[in-house]
Image 1 (cartoon, one colour):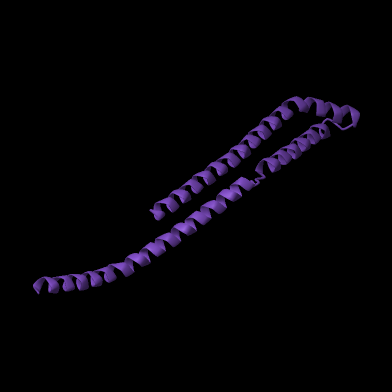
Image 2 (image 1 turned 45 degrees about the vertical axis):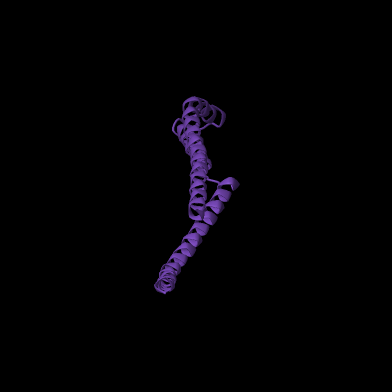
Length: 142
């Protein structure tokens, strides 16, 4: 029964690890979606304002003002992309990794011990069974 308990522990640790990983990836996707929406809205609402600032406040020409707006858009898109792509492994996910690895190692050790015990007790029990049966049959003859 020890093998089943260890296997159950390993499976539970694997399920927990997958749940933690799914949560981390879900947060990462949510951040990327927000970054994309913010980038889109900033493009729509900020272009006219930036163009006016670059054109009239800084004295840029009719070509340089839209170029500065485009450069600002690219910079903001890269910043949001950088923040959305960062992925931190949480301590709970590290703990789940450790629990799973320990359980799998314990399962391997239990299976190894079980295999060695089966390999030894198979021939040993046949040998002992023959000896006991032989002694019992000799006693019955006398």
